[in-house]
Structures are given as structure tokens and as C-alpha cells.
Length: 533
Image (cartoon, rainbow, N blue to C red):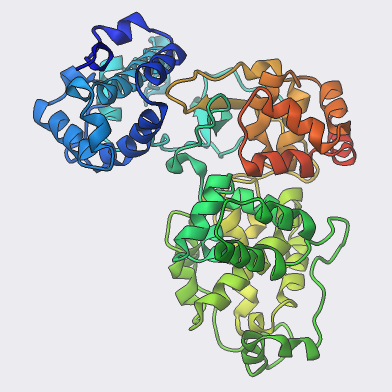
């Protein structure tokens, strides 16, 4: 056995920097083998029952459980490569690096967690109780999902007194002892191109409904290109048809998958409506209804009066809460709409998400404006006349908004007596987004970059356009785009120069590259920055 195949001694202690360990692995082994380990190790770790303890190194784990993990990995397609290394030491090292990084983060963030007392008088007279690091690690290690987000991943609590004027909360906090909140943004790695774990991407039920749950190859192609969530889809559908076609043409897909995605994302959806238009969709004529079998079926639906339902009553509050919850299966909504054609449901979802995206992004504050957009969308399909109060449109919009945590208004709830406690939050009309951001980097090998170098004006500009663009803040910090003037100058460059600036230093996926070129134009950025002048 060659010497470098033998198991190194005290490697983690010798190489404290995550990047140095990765370079060592890439040097002492084949880089393809290491990438293969990374792809195989995550699902195998999650599949273990009982799970591994995240706070324990490989030599501290239960021997039988660790042996089972090694056997699972070595029995897969890398069996021949793994057999070259003594005790499969790259697997041990990758796990120990994660544990080391986890314990370092726990030491910083969990060493002292204040727990408010139930008695306010007693709380003011005594020091806040703290929870030990060991207990926090034990609680976190119960879940087999190593990359699982916290219970409320969109917020993080800070101490009392940290609340500043103008901060908008991403989640309503009823208790006065709980301070203000900061929006947490999970980011992949711009050094090695490692994407976000699926658990942290956000809901993608709308994307799956549009593409089709069973079209796994088409979904895989989009996910690998960076179009992974409903928030990504909402911004993508607002692009012009030729930009969406350019994106699909650049996908690494088979000819069939590419043609199917062109039909679903470009041909059927068409051009996004103008944001200046008071009424987004255009009313269709009776002659246009003969273009498809689905629409001819809708024409035969008996109508009583315009904008009056013809038989399908609106569900109650409890059913509405379930149907608009992104964590619940979308089949609940599909079954409640009493449709026998799943393709028709998917197409309806695409129509509503496209036409309603402009409303959700501008945070209108009156019920009249919301009712106007619902009425405008209802003209797209005679099918909506079946439903009382056009409730499928309202439910789909609410589910999308809750999915990617965009602030939306109380009147998005279709029931008049609905409670605001179930909503994600509220945002007044034309109010700049000023809630502070906290970036969390998920790569186990690269620690991330200091996003404080990017001015708040730039961060607010990106966030006011879409939550997707906020992901680019660390990338801008790495390439030196840090002020409003830097951003304006960057937007004046042609696409070739933008790509050269970004790709010379960082690794972007296809969707991020297109987002930079399509969204960050001189006219759009000047308009957004004017809000914070």
C-alpha cells in the first residue's frame, strides 16, 4: 500500500483551516473521489437509524453505527476507490471537519442562551438563566437531519434594546420580552460552487406543480441550474420571454427535457405583464377559448352570473390554513378544487403565480387593490367562475407568499374573520425593506465572507427587488461591489464584462448569472436606489 493511502495521524489538529484540509484531500486523493464522497455521504448519514451524533467525532461514535455508515458508502459505486484508503479515512475526515465546524459555531452562538422567566418581577431582580452548551448540543443532535434549519429559520432573536426604528420584522412577535428579529439568509458556497442543502432552499411546491411532480429529470435540471424554489420561479416568470428562452437553451438537459421546459416556462406562460399596467392579465375572447382542449372544457361549464360562483363553495378557515401552508401537500388544494385533470391544475397555478407576482412584490395595502388583482386574474379562465369568491386564486397567492416568506397583507386571507397571527408579516405600501440581514454559510470547507463590507443601501436595493437577489450580497463582497456607486458602475457594463468580473473570482450557477444580467440593469437599479436616497 503506498504511503499516502495510509490513514494520516491527527490530521484535523494539524490542518485547522477548512480550506487547507480540502486542499490536502484533493492532493492526497483523486478530486473526483472526494466529490463522490460528498454526494454519497449526506443521504447515507440521514438514512442511518439511530442517527449519528452531530457533536461527536468519528472515533466517539457508536462503533457499530459508524461501521454501518462506512459499509453503506463503500457498497455504493465508489467501492473500488474507497478500498484504496486505510480505514476509509477520507470519510472519517470529512465527518470530523463538520463536527469541528459545528462545535465552533455552537461555542459562539449557544454558550449562553438567555431564557426569560415567566415572572416579570422575578426576572428583573435576577440574572437570566442560561442553557449550557452540552444541553444545546444534545437537543440539536436528536434530529437525523444534520443541515436542518431552526424551528423558525426566517428569524433570529436578539437581546432587548436592539430594536431600531425602521426595522421591519419578518415574523410577528407578540411577547415584548422577545426583542426584534433579523432575517436569516442561507447561502451556498461561492468559492467551490457548493449549493444550498435542499432543506434550506425554501418551499418549491409551486415549481413542482408547474413542472410536474413526476418529471424528475426536468426538476433535476432546474435545481442544478439554481432555479430551486418558488421565490426563484416568481422572479424568473417576470423576465421577458426571450430571456427565459435563453436560460432554458443554456440548461444542461436532453433535447426532450429542454423542449418540455421551453413549453412550460416560455411558450405557455408567455411574456410577463408590465408592472405599470393597472390590470395585469388581458381579457380573452370567446374565439380564443377554442385553442386548447382544457379551455373548451371550461366553456361548457354552466355560468349563472358574471363573477358569481356556480357550485364550489369556499372552504372554512381551518381548511384554508392547511391548503395555504407550504408544509402541507398541494394535493389538498387540488382535491378541494374538484378537478379531474392535474395538468389543468398545474397550468392554473402557473397563471396565478405569474399574474399575482407583481402584486406580491409591491406590497399593496388595501383590500380594494387585492380584490382588483383577483378579479383581473379571474378573467384569464372561465373556470374560476365555478368558485365562490374566486377562492382558488386567493389560496394560491397566499400559499406562494407564505412559501417564500414575502411580506404580505392581512387581506390576503380570503376569510373576513381570519386571524393575523397565522400570517408571516405585514409591510406598508412603498415602505423600504430595512430589516437587518444575517447571512449563514452552509459550506463545510469555506467559512464565507464578511458581508458587512457591502453597504446597507446595496443590500436594501437587492432585497426590495426580490429575496433571490439578496443571495448575491456575499458575492458582491468578494468581488468588491460594496457601495451604491460601485453597483451603478457595475450595472453599466455589458454582459460579457459582468460575467468576466464575477467568474474570475467566484462560482455562480446559471440562474444567478442570468439574474445579474437581467435584473441588475442601469435603469432598474437606479429606480430601486432612488427609494433609499
